[in-house]
Length: 169
Image (spheres, rainbow, N blue to C red):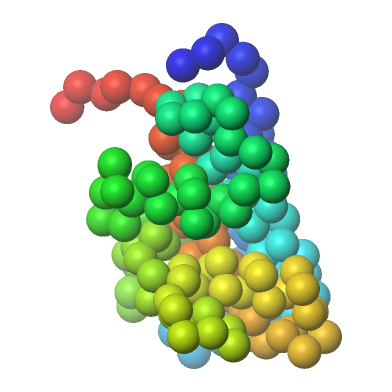
């Protein structure tokens, strides 16, 4: 890994703090996963932008330093991470004490959602991010707790890859 400063982890931690604050306003449980709000929309858009940025940084560092800035992060970078690193098998576990969801395991890099208006699949958090980014008024219900948690799981996993540390178990 280069000796550059990790700009992504402090941003992740700030987003994590915002989600933590939200858990004091919304009882995070199975019944509340579809609750949506403008605050959650803002968080999902910020998370999506961070996922785009960090995935392109990792891709440039590990695979192709000439990756174009306008390259689609999901069609280029994440697709390669899934192929090379089996990113689609990586699980993030929700362990927050204020979260009471029955399913605490997230596989954020499994394409499990039909892309809005298309036949192909995408990641649920990415579908929410793209819908909110491009047509927030019509897609406001995508600003839900469900997609927020999935997006945070994706960003957390990418931050671990960005750190590029080896941990002996």
